[in-house]
Image 1 (cartoon, rainbow, N blue to C red):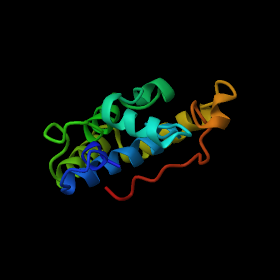
Image 2: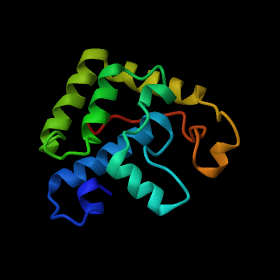
Image 3: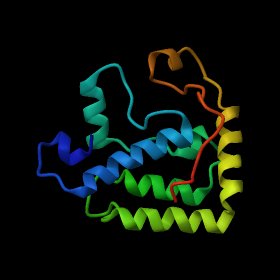
Image 4: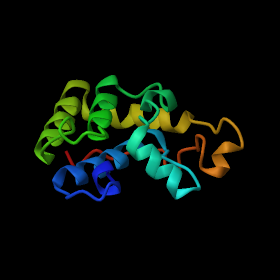
Length: 140
């Protein structure tokens, strides 16, 4: 759910790009960017808190991918990706720059190494182990 949706504002395609950013964040880290057992806490986080940097949870993540994810999760839609083609282009460029196979294998290895830091993982408030050791980037 995008910040503008939480506020009850009129929606456009940029709300979907925020949601895509949530999916990318989860693919890259194994975690949701905004998490809690309390829906009100999640709404407040979506509106007012920046998510933890993806590289905090996955240090092997390419810095450029982190930039793409965080831009998609920008709270102010004026600063978010404006069109899906823009994010697709950035992801294609990243794939070309570091090589598609290298991107998939380095992300999979990094996710495999993620470990829960404490019992917070069970509550959904902390890091959780990745469920999959393979990421597919064939959609680019």
